[in-house]
Image 1 (tube, rainbow, N blue to C red):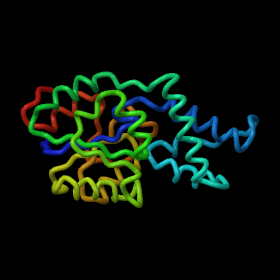
Image 2 (cartoon, rainbow, N blue to C red):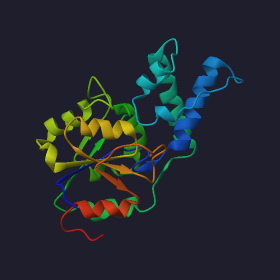
Image 3 (cartoon, rainbow, N blue to C red):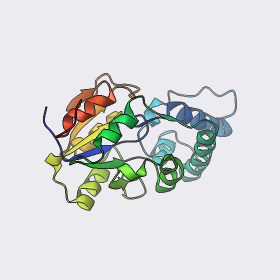
Image 4 (cartoon, one colour):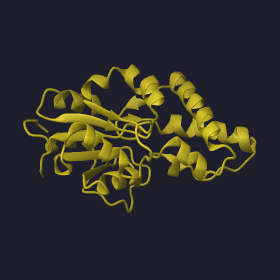
Length: 214
């Protein structure tokens, strides 16, 4: 197994288990539009892509307004029942801190969603560079977020490993020439997703960095 000087993480489904918050808040918004008795489609596709893109795919009349309503509902749900770090993740981040590795985030959250939801967890100090969907014209699955990360940090593609839970994460990294690890502890639909690595538990991340004990 090779080592990397940059480990970049997705947030939802990778660091934090937010599936319940994501689905409940999206379902609430859709029922506002379609009625309480509406049969909702399979919404797993929406996990890992920018919220605006999900609203466009659902063909809502005003995707931008629907996204704002979803963002508000998501934050409300998160306050009621915050998503939890996956078991072993906090310990893994603690072991990575202080090592010769840069930690980054690339997320489909908007900057305001990131500020309101993630940084309140006091985990922001682990990460040197954060790229949100507000920072690039195109979000995942396009390579733009990863290319933005490379631009900001000066890292070469071969120095970076991106860790995520969805096909969109893998495509973003692959099309930027970056290796990518699919985290199976948070992936909703892992079958058939191509990845450089497939990880079953957070502790395995330590094996990609020099000087850490797995």
